[in-house]
Length: 371
Image (cartoon, rainbow, N blue to C red):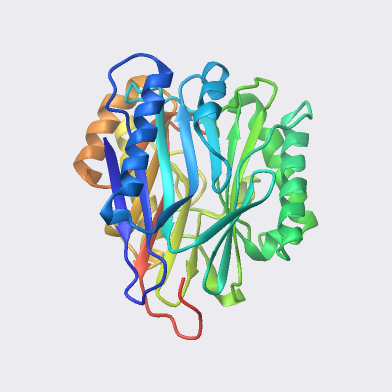
């Protein structure tokens, strides 16, 4: 079973699509469920409606990385597409769920370890997926991730401050290790001129783990080359949210990038928070979900978008027993939007739920090239 969203450019530029694929296989073996998901994805790409599309980024949500990643690596190619694997158990009961982002009429190539270039028209897009870190603590693993990523960007003439659009941090035992991620990111950003007076980068920092337990931090990232400075803007929704720097962390609530034919919107991990930085509705999953939606709505509205423009949603729950009620709420609100609900603790224990999303809006923007 899959959920598909497609955006067609009216200007003949690249089309884009998001798909969330759940297994139809009722067998309990991970390998059987994975084979079913891979077949569904292959069939989708071979269909007439997806002619010309290529995957440019894929993330596999798995239930038990230590026992499943070796099998997954035997079935998944990394030759042309960035592949992210994270243990965030899908709460639908599957052992694996796939999120894939696809573009039409692009060329892709691997240009470094887990670093990929996607080219179309005036722009080059760069996707980075995590590699293993050998340092012992989350602080130094975070810094090393950034050092490697900055080197990757530098190799193609880009910089962290000017070109990185979005990052994801998956933190093993987030209640213990998130502080190191925050400190490491703050140190790197300060060194590279990213401050509350300039800008940060849209991000999600959430619980998740690698197959190796001593890998405490995974980082995925997305950057674009060829942008003019005015094309990338940041979202604040100050009526609903505060600046993250007010409580010591460094990321933007959301970012959008304007192209000649569309606006792409990246909403960071967003929870039930107010514009003073307080957690709202502790211990109430329904009210936290509703406030989370309200916050995301405010961010989308600031980018002149709404829920109809949302292409994919990832929902993170701390407590798996909240799944049934959250599933009902999301089905009622977003029945046709590709989304997945996974178990992944948020960076504050009082937050029971968090979500992120990507959206795309058709626009006509003068003086910049189409996507």
